[in-house]
Structure formats: structure tokens, C-alpha cells
Image (tube, helix red, strand yellow):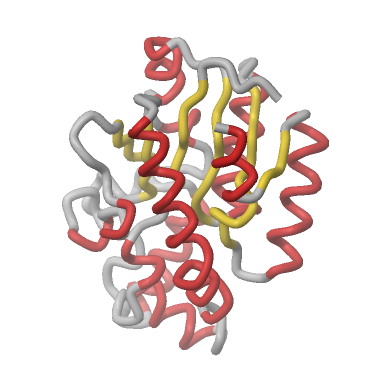
Length: 213
């Protein structure tokens, strides 16, 4: 497979998804005990170690690294997708503040193991797809990219939605299976199968991708 002009996209791999003290984790654990166990374990054991190597190699090759972050830009979170806003308000009523942190909140930052470095691109969004609520499309055009290598959280939600939108805009898609995580293994794998079919893309492991480079 020839990658052509490619860039690495890291979707929503932010502290508030994984910090056990963050409202996002504590609220959903209170509502659905065990809700965060699978995704947290997978991120720590597979996603972050694998992605760390991929990010490092991407930078060494001089290829772009783009980060998408899901966070509120309005103080009342009214700019969030209606589903995120509904969850935010429900959590607030239950006494859990900042379910989705504001862009300037430390919990909105990318996890430190793969944090952005000078020269990387960071875009904030308020929806599932980065194409709906960020300037990623114009940035990709400026960078003259042809293919996106998709990683991050959650596979069946923001990663897949962004990948599908990218495919509709003519970008080739590569999913790195072990650099993504979902809340259940079945949704993770089903999403990759569906996305590969719809996007006409490829699903690789980090090791195979690094070998390809």
C-alpha cells in the first residue's frame, strides 16, 4: 500500500476520559458501574504505548500530527452536540460538574504520553466529527494531505464519524486498530469492520504500520 501524502490524526485522547477523578469517569461509573473499565485498561495497556511509538515515528519522518479535542467552548456548553449537552446537563443536576471540560481546562488536554509538540496541530471540536465543528478540512487542504491515519477515542463514535466524513471528502483512510479504543470490544471491532467497508480504507496494527513506513 502506498500512503502518499499522509498525516496522523489523534482523536479525543484526552485526560478527562481516563482520569479516575474526572467527572466524566465518576458520573458514568455512578450511572453504569464498570462503564470505563474496558476503555481505560485498553488505553493504558495498548493504545497509549502503541500510539506513542507511532507519533514518534511520524514526527521523525516529518509527517503532520493532528490532534482533535472534544471540549466545550461556551461556558454553559451550549455549543456541544445535543447528545453531549444532554449528558452534561444530567451530570450537572446530579452534582458532577465539567463532564465535558472547557478548552482551557487541564483535563481537556491530550494525555501527556502522546501530548502535542511544537509543530503539531491541535483543533477543538464540539461534535462527533472534526469536520462539523473545526477547521480540519481547510487545514488538511493547506497541508495537501491525501490520506489520514486514524487513532484515538472512541472507535465507534468520534473516530469513525470523522473517518466517514473524511472519506466523503475524498481522503483515504487507514485505521490503526490497536491505537484506538471503545467502551466495549464488540463495538470497537464492529466499528472497524463497518468503517473499512464504507470508507474503503485499511485496518492495520501499529507494528504493521511502522513496518510499512
